[in-house]
Image 1 (cartoon, one colour):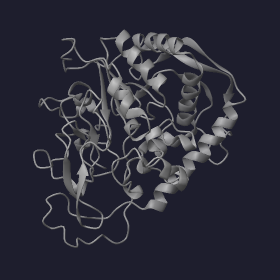
Image 2 (image 1 turned 120 degrees about the vertical axis):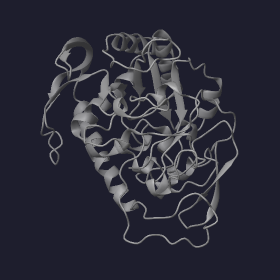
Image 3 (image 1 turned 90 degrees about the vertical axis):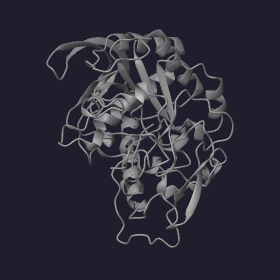
Image 4 (image 1 turned 45 degrees about the vertical axis):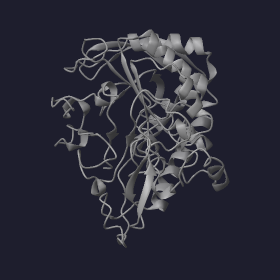
Length: 391
């Protein structure tokens, strides 16, 4: 499961034709749907080519050592291929290096912490995001329509966050990154739940976590943050239960996963009955840009839609109970963001992209809700609805 990427602008802005009384959002230029579709299609081609190449190879989990960015040696678990993926596997986009092994646990540079990633996007094109099936243009229209029953509002394809997912384009679409995500996806669908849990626990316990200034209110010690799915999502109930068990086995680690599974059949009831451990913050993600963050508070928030008209959008966009242990998240256009305290769609606006400097846009340098430098609100503040401003 992922968030949103830079939006391309159309030539002409949309005119406001009567929504002036609404306090949310002056209208401006929106994303080009053909451009978003082309980005997804490129990822589909790369992914299918890699899947064909990997189908001819075997891989196994091994233990090894690697050098971290600080030059220190670290012990990790790896997926080792019997034959490497060579640079010419994707002829129109050569990889920068041959792929011989893939770390079981990756690292999210912006978040500066260990992460577990799967292929993003709709199941229809090889992704691990069942909630994306109604919200991506590469999914055939008949399949998109079949998924709409779960979402308690019309799906506006040109505004769905899944349509502009950062993890189906840019660096995430490179053969090297896609190859690693596909291998993880193959493995976790093939192994039994017990093996999955034992292997992930062993890998997480071997990780070198970043030094944090923030104290985890659950442990009274510095936060040990782990991101589940900076790409991808929970793709099956069994897989989700396995991750909940992983979190129980390592209570000293604080896990965070955003999810849009609520938009797929059977998932709201699953989360309602799930026993989510307190060290695993699971946030439901909004379906459209400019939607309010999902919240157990219910009700509606009034927004200005693309036609410049007032529209009430649900704070919980699915039927049934609110089964999550945290408030949700959204992504609001920069020009529509009224700011903290004024915008009723969220409580905390992520400050990561407010930092100045190319290499400064990280959680470690972002302002936190507590007013300190270094933010882990997504992990340790389940009481806050979070916005990641579209950038």
